[in-house]
Amino acid sequence: MARVVILGGGVSGHTAATFLAKWLGRDHEVVVVTPNAKWNWIPSNIWVGVGGMRKEEVIFELDPVYKKAGIDYRQAKAISIHPEGGADVAKQFVTIEYTGQGKEGNSEQLTYDYLVNATGPKLNFGATEGLGPDNGYTVSVCTADHAVHASEKLDELIAQMKSGEEKKILIGTGHGMCTCQGAAFEYTFNVDHKLREEGVRDKATITYISNEYELGDFGVGGMHIKLGGYVTSGKVFAESLYTERNVKWIKRAHVNKVEADRVHYESLDGSMHEEEFDFSMLIPPFAGAGMKAYDKAGEDITSKIFNPGGFMFVDADYSKGAKPFEDWDAADWPSYLQNPTYKNMYAVGIAFAPPHLISKPMKSPNGTPINPTPPRTGMPSAMMGKAVAQSLKDIILNSATEPTHTANMSEMGAACVASAGKGIFSGSAVAMTMYPVIPNYKKYEYGRDLNGTFGEIGLAGHWVKHFLHFAFLWKAKLKPFWTIIPE
Amino acid sequence: MKIKPYSQNAYTPVPSAFTKFRRNCVIWQFFRFIVINIKMTVLILKSHH
Ligand SMILES: Cc1cc2nc3c(=O)[nH]c(=O)nc-3n(C[C@H](O)[C@H](O)[C@H](O)COP(=O)(O)OP(=O)(O)OC[C@H]3O[C@@H](n4cnc5c(N)ncnc54)[C@H](O)[C@@H]3O)c2cc1C
Image (cartoon, rainbow over all chains, first blue to last red; front, side, top):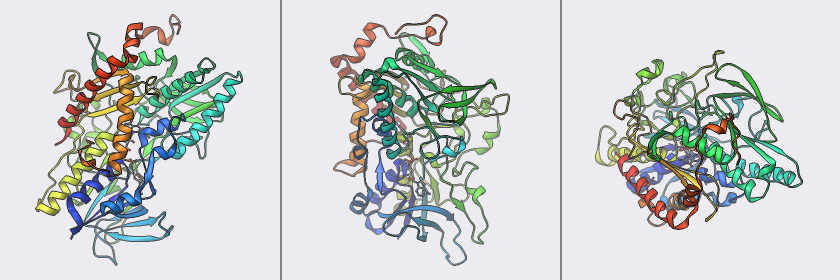
């Protein structure tokens, strides 16, 4: 009997765990270690953050779902990995610390045969002074609770605007090394939409601040699409929407400090600026979960397993990270998501260490890096979870000696629907697909297949987004026919 | 909205009234809904290895 331990029950970990439990049956053990009792469909937090959805609509209790699936659920967080075992435990194990199930604070050594690290991002608000809802001055929509808080603050602001006050709203990225610009983009247009609905749009100045070199970069080096008889850069498409909605933009910005009423930021040209706000939602930079790793003798081998950001090494070509942008290649990206040192360990979703950025690295004359880091959005993350589950199924049930399924971002597309306002007839969204995620200028004139890369704005995009909300929650709850809903 | 000459927004394309109408026209958008779903399905099929 094999035991697969999955660290993190978010998009990629939940996908891996539920498929594995289905395929392996009760003869093998699937254990999920994740600190939250509730699962969150994160993309819909944007709507919670403008009061368009209740928190309860974007979360559900994990315990009954895992019981139904036969998954051993530990409400805990992983602290350290011991891939060779330890002095007292011969087998490889993870040390976990409970956050619920009546065992809060208790530690346990959990042995495994196969380990899947799906711990996603740590929201690194601490990287910028004054950033974030807990110890700073900005709100966030990265968790459902953050989004509820953001919505309350936005309501207060709207009430003040209704009494005639003019307000400044600043939305974007809170550091030069952020990813997830898509979420900031969505929140910007949902706030705009909400203010229009409330009849106070004329009382607000909305500004978008971003570490992107150009709008529409999204950490994937931008994209080209066919539009109106042209092959057009996504920058044109994005700028058009900002102009249409009367949103000012600041690009190439590293926010280095937030105060109660303003942010301080450095531009890529090295100049320093300030931007005032009354309400601000800034995405934090992401770090890895911060787990440690130890060898059998108890020596710290964290740097052998994780990069300095805390993301786990897999079968990528990390030597390319030190080479110039022009030398980067689609082949640098990992296929099997397998750790090269300990082959029974895998990392999926945001938890794996990318070989390098996707966007071109940029530094200000002061040496400050100002460039988006690589996104690992929902669809690729879930696909990675499923591919690793398929490989593990073949290894465990069919005696395969190597992983059998790949999920390489250079051979995988991403579909993203960015909401620009909620409402069955008044809503709108930008529906985008790109293929592949990692541009390949050797293969495609514009880096990507123009037949698989497109973008359009409209009501249909909103319907797709709303439909996906229900479909993915249905799937995550393992309701009938969940397996036929694609990742 | 008004475009201010020489400002940031003076250099971007903006949708025409017809484009805006199409974006909100339920019949046209129903058709686009099907097209978007087909495009996404093709993408998913291409992405599984
Ligand atoms: C506001 C917002 C909107 C977004 N909108 C979209 C969108 O529209 N479309 C899209 O494709 N993507 C979107 N994304 C991105 C998407 O949410 C991520 O790509 C996806 O969640 C990544 O999956 P993951 O499994 O790697 O991480 P997560 O889904 O974040 O899961 C990680 C899990 O690991 C757990 N964990 C953390 N530390 C530990 C530990 N030490 N031990 C055990 N468990 C741990 C966490 O609690 C969490 O449950 C959005 C993101 C945000 C923040």
